[in-house]
Image 1 (cartoon, rainbow, N blue to C red):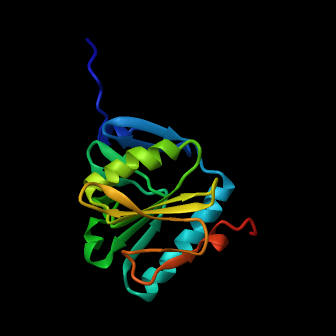
Image 2 (cartoon, rainbow, N blue to C red):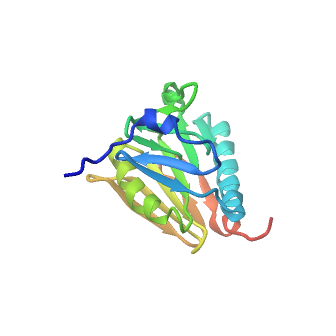
Length: 183
C-alpha cells in the first residue's frame, strides 16, 4: 500500500527558481511553463486598469504575479493578479500573501486551463475569495465568479462590451480593448 505524499509550504520553498510557475493545491504539486507574450500583454492591461481603479477609489492593493499566496500550508497559489481591500492589507507579509485575497484574476493558457477553471475555482471558493475572473485569450472571454450559497458561481461570461465587477463598484474593462492584438 502506497502512502500519498502531501506537499507543504516548506516543500514549496525548496523548489527551484527557474522561471516556471510552481503551485501546491491540496498538497499536490502543479508546474506550468512561463507565460507567452499575449498572456503578459493581457495581464498588463487588466493590471493597469485595476491598479488605476484601486488608486482612484482608495480601494486597496493590486499586485501582479509572480507572488505567492499562502492560503494554507498545503495550498500555495500564484494568481496572475491579486486584489486586497484596504481593510485587509494585514495579510501582506514580507515574502508572500498570508491569507485569502478579495479579488483574483487568472489569464488562462492551454497548460493552466483545467487548474484555473476547475481546481482553483473550487479552492478559491473554499477559502472565501469574493470575486474571481477567468480571462481566456483563446476565445476572448472574461468569466466572472462571485460567492453563492455553495462555492463560486459564474455571474457573467463576457465576449463583447464591458466586463463589470460586482466587488469593485464602478470597475469595468472593455473586452474588445482587452483582447486587441494591437500593441
